Image 1 (cartoon, rainbow, N blue to C red):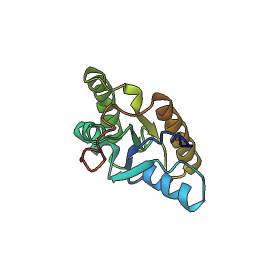
Image 2: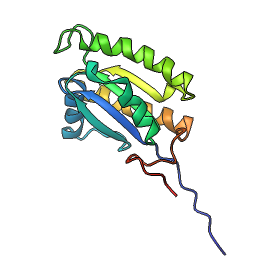
Image 3: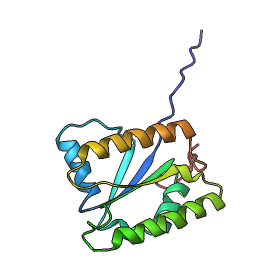
Length: 150
């Protein structure tokens, strides 16, 4: 008489977002009541160029299933070239992830301006669906806080 309850996998996504563009777009999406999955936890950075590769690796090591990086469109960076630095790092980090056994599809970078709340919402929906398809991350047994789950 026991009923099996199948729990659907809900990904944990960490988002590093530029204060001036993507974070503002997320704020716009929220205030305009645009729907997007609650799976993402945003960490505001002053610039996408300030996202250290170690931040990405630590997010995965602490149990994140996906990492999102959002910045200003090229040519529109508040700090002139910060997003171009982010783009170069992004390519390098994808290769690094692959070399340590983490599928590079688990990380995504997008240029989203402050006025693109709809694009932010749609991007997060797409990325969440992609991570659901990939399944739990390789370090999922570890909570975001760094403690092992039982």
